[in-house]
Picture 1 (cartoon, one colour):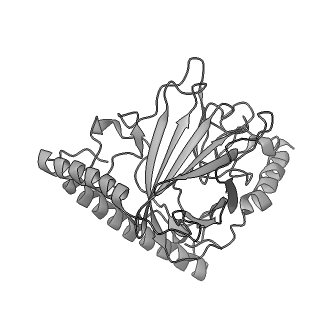
Picture 2 (tube, helix red, strand yellow; picture 1 turned 120 degrees about the horizontal axis):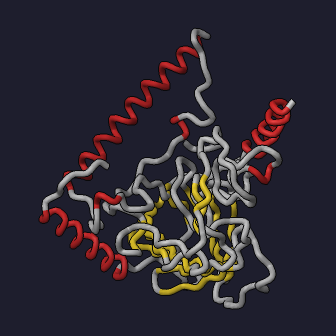
Picture 3 (spheres, helix red, strand yellow; picture 1 turned 30 degrees about the vertical axis):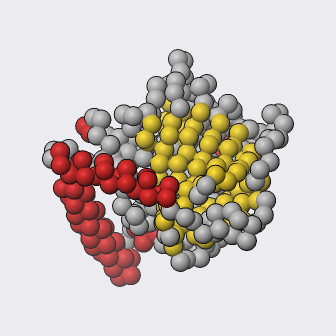
Length: 346
């Protein structure tokens, strides 16, 4: 069960206020004394939501601006409110047509009932990327190309295996031609963790020497040994890599390496950048308030990018429960895609 810019000119004063507010928030996060567990470690246990509407990359029209103005925030919130109203009206019409069997049609694979994009903690940043300072991905190394897919899954874009993006595919000769999420292997839950259309929740468990990070999307549980610095042999690679962690003040630092080259250094719904064979991923979870957590990850992979990437995404504690995510795309859709392709060939 799943629970479920336009360019404007901001005045200098609101931007200064937002910048000062951001610096004050960062200082407050450092000063906040997090609760500790029975072993004296900062207590991360609970369920955290990371829904976000902030783009990964900063739209070019913002230039070097890191924060939205107050006017832009209000305009954005109003556009999203109106969009939700229009979406509800469209789906009400579709539902009525299906009930009455008049001009009925499919409501799609996943309708808006399941969507979970509303930020519980507004993000004033113009991008999730905070380094490079322009808020955009660094240049790829020479000779590398971005692998593109059609995230709707309708159009197949020819390419080579392995498919490293999550949605779409290069063909239908076999399951290996489809995106990683269609095959129920890798989701936006990563690692690293990025917000998606729904299921943007994780649960953290911890004991004396382990932390477990359970992602709702894909229902993957990552078991992280604490204060164990030796990684597994370099010849052993895994979809989620090999994680090791330690505590530092209010923060949990997790370093992950030994990723398979079948995933991208940065894999998105419709894009894949390089491969993760040489990627080192450093995640930082910081308790910044009673109900707030800062999540920051750094990708270090000079085999793919010419510089490192740092992403910051706020999370909020929620009083919810996680239910199993059963990936029916892999259970049913893949088989039907391949059957349909064989029928088309005949």
